[in-house]
Image (cartoon, rainbow, N blue to C red):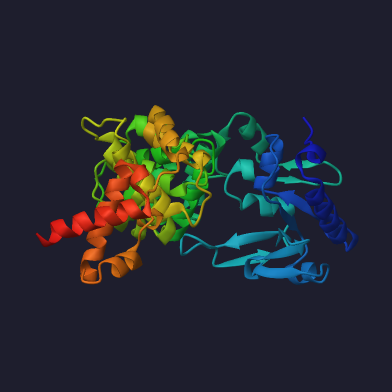
Length: 428
């Protein structure tokens, strides 16, 4: 079945690809679309990025285009920029020696396309496509493996994984995002090369986890990482066997892709259950997750832990819903998201059918934070000059609890009256 590049590639990208292809071929060089973009095209999917390979060396590529960035020139890669869109162009190469278990010690240029394809990780990624002629170069049965949904290394999987410890993690990620099965010998090699996988940076590991979260079934990545005991490579204090809670993992797949922190919360709750927030924070920081993702994860983990273990919780208790969930959401996200009923709906993996009640409350626009009160510290200072400033927080928080129970009390005169009563109680 021919690749439908015209229908799968946006017109702007297609124009750029033809431009790069023509420039290289007119200069006497070869040019092919390669790797994941070809895999996606074979699968009938629109690629998210486009990588090309050529027998032109980096400096020769640079002479052909106006804007070129030296993204990985030592390894033969430059980035051609057209209309602010990046296209990686890499010279055919042979990788020589992998003493660090991550990158080749040196590379050899001036090889053939065949030699270049041999160095790649999996058969499904060792495809090259000539966008002008429509010829698909498939020397490792990659198209067949794609059709059968199989992840298989090129050649000996032990050798390929020993070269680069990230490849086993990529295999798990592809199995998750593409819904493929890892071929038996390739899967076995994941176990047998863990000493090499241990050499990869924590940043690269967590990056693969986050990439899996953008796929349709991130739960599979977490399940596979647990099955292969990969987490313990980077977190040696974890138990020798992790058994993710299935009901939690299934809900992980329902989470909005923009709420990475919630995805992390479900992943670690499924893996570790009632771990302390301090220990979870330590794990997230060890794995080099960003400060924002860590903070978001801790918030959602707290929500999930509290909700899953709630005892005799009355969903009709709007005070608790507002104080324990809606107020923290507003406080935490109001500067980064448009907080509306659609955003609250995205919390449904935590709250299930009860989300409709939370949306109803949210749409009433109740006061939830101290900043929502009609009375503030300045008003207290003006009206009660003898009140110690150290008591302002006590009074304001008591007023907030009052309006969380009864939003109609959020009027200046009423709050001023309540303040007088609360202050009187403080001094008695």
